Image 1 (cartoon, rainbow, N blue to C red):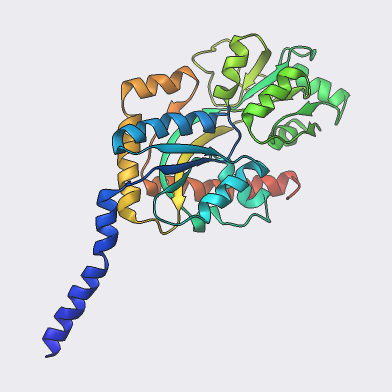
Image 2 (image 1 turned 90 degrees about the horizontal axis):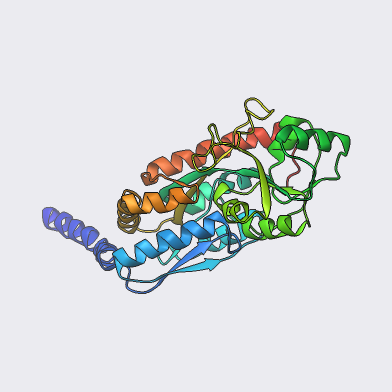
Length: 314
């Protein structure tokens, strides 16, 4: 009787896992909501739409982009973290997800505990772009002008790291994403901005803005004449943005694995890599575990930077 009871318990335990496994095999059975935690027009928006379209093709269901900008990406991230863990709500944030763990103390989620990593998507540096009427042509010019007029130059991004390392003070004007920030910079509402490189490219090509530096470790192949910020006057300065896809915590591992498989496959294709390279994004996938490790490392790294720089906590 004892052996029979044990066998029954084992069968029941195995049976409890069948619905989850079966649903994962059928996934997705309806459209998937893909939250981009920034306004339309930025790099996260671009990647969300490009990767979402590939997932739609591969999985036979529409991945609907839902832009939920605001509060540095925390509004969209909170929506994803609080959504049902069934694979039908995903989010495409960037490195700001890690920075916000310290910067936004009142957010209603923990990126590490409440979101499940799926895959890294790519990475890109920021660009330093100025309104055409601002009398600077180099990073040295910008820093010199900021020192001459502390707190008077308006900038449309949260790159306080530049202030800290350059020893200057700018006036930060917040926006809901790189797209609105670029529009304001073109219009002269702010003097300069530091969006992800792909966000600035269309405006640079149209001559609406002037670029004076990129924040990566090397120059961008599409604009080889533009120096890195480190080359242009701030040795050691580096800021590279990674982008990734996450799901609510406790999303079935089989669904996470399937999404990861399709993202890795899509980013490995030459046409996809070329498509992203044209706008300055280096396609770069990962395992869920690798993305989780990257997130945790950057949470710790940026906590130290924010605290040492005395950056205000929201």
